[in-house]
Length: 192
Image (cartoon, rainbow, N blue to C red; front, side):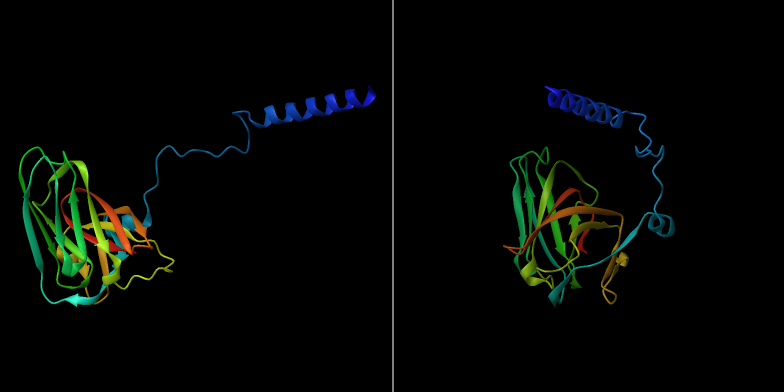
């Protein structure tokens, strides 16, 4: 009986400590900033972020452009020589729209989309075959997608790109594929 009272007292003390530790006024609670701080990179580059661009095993000798008119039912554009596929899901556009994708010449995995600036009701999916690139399965840097504003933001020699927006994507090592979402048309590059 005496042991039972000791255990009850011990459990009561532990419960009290647990409740007190969960208090909103806990001194160890992290403080939330009122305003997010602006990053150094954004300050220095005026909103552009520099990323290492993914490169092709064999640079493209010329631009490769494909076009198709795609309506509400959706569709697909492919550039096999660049290992690229764009999937337009059902409902992405209201009416038939002329889509254009250009794989840019050179070694960077970069594309331009048209009509430039169009936004979509449903995000499109861009798929890049990584077997035609210098990507390695054991790379420590995750791949991302990014929008560049103009071709001059692509540095073929330095293998970098200045990006206005960085978008997370999905790398599938088993199939050697990278997938990214496209919500509006602009220049697009796969980067590290």
